[in-house]
Length: 146
Image (cartoon, rainbow, N blue to C red; front, side):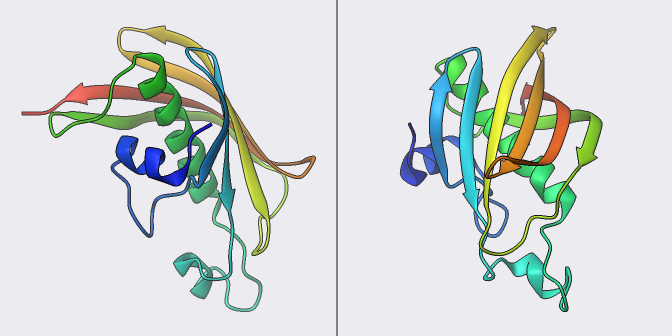
């Protein structure tokens, strides 16, 4: 379990792009389950779409990537700092199965598939209740910056 205060210590993201509210389960080096409460107050709903608010698919992918970053930091017992940045390196097989709307609770299940040459590969699934909303393979990497 991780609350928002612990998440804020690990992720550099802030409003309006912080997309993880709570970690429900974590198994270091293996898997993580986190949630995002989707409210009508999200800034993206103003334009996507005014007549029918729907969470953009790319933001569901970003929420899964942030969840993956939390798993990575927990797995290596490290925290990001001013010299280390966690980047998206790729997305494969992204599929969107159901719209995510205000009032939904998006639950992300992300598992670490493998690590090779500093690239982490994850399988991510996001659900609303029992319904699949989004799935993708995510690749991320940690880099030291000057």
